Amino acid sequence: MDVIPAIDLLGGQCVRLIQGQYDRRITYRDDPAAQAREFHADGAQWLHIVDLDGAKAGRPVNTESIAAIAKLGLLKLEVGGGLRDETAIRQLLDLGVTRVIIGTKAVGDFEWFTRMAETFPGQLVLGLDARDATISTHGWLEDSARSLLEFAIVADALPLAAIIYTDIAKDGMLTGPNLERTRALVEAVDTPVIASGGVKEAEDIRKLKPIGVAGVIVGRSLYEGTLTLPDALAAAG
View (cartoon, rainbow, N blue to C red):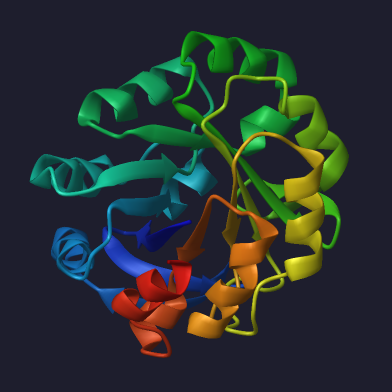
């Protein structure tokens, strides 16, 4: 199980949003590249980046920061936020990003997402952000009528790198991941599932491990000090 530290970018800074609310943000670092170097020094192999400005704008915005991290050549990057067309996907891949995360556009235009998955096999990640069992889109600002599990099962037929499941109610709250819904998703699909949201301490990762997730994203717990990356990696085995 991969442990994937997260950097959320807003105005070029590393921040965390509480339950996805832009007016409830905590700013941690002014230098995302320096943070990436620290994560690598602590043993990370992957880095999860969300362009929060991009999620609102519908196009990549923090490309300068993403490019600076990619140029370090230290970590494999997965990046999401505002990717709504093929040009944006190619832009990030050309910067050196390993895989890109599509959420809103995948839910709103599945035919397009299918074409992109076939065009970039193994390089796209489906980002499913949910309140309860319902998918949310547009940087968590809008709720759709789509069922998390039903949509994931349909998308499972595509050549995806992974599915990232984020429980919005848990994200940034340090109250533990949604184990029940994560388990249901893992059992419903063959595509690797990455859990996101709520991890506070190493015990949370130990609880996720037997579920069979391919990875877990950790963010606020690392910045707040309730979890260290070495301890998280040890818990993941």
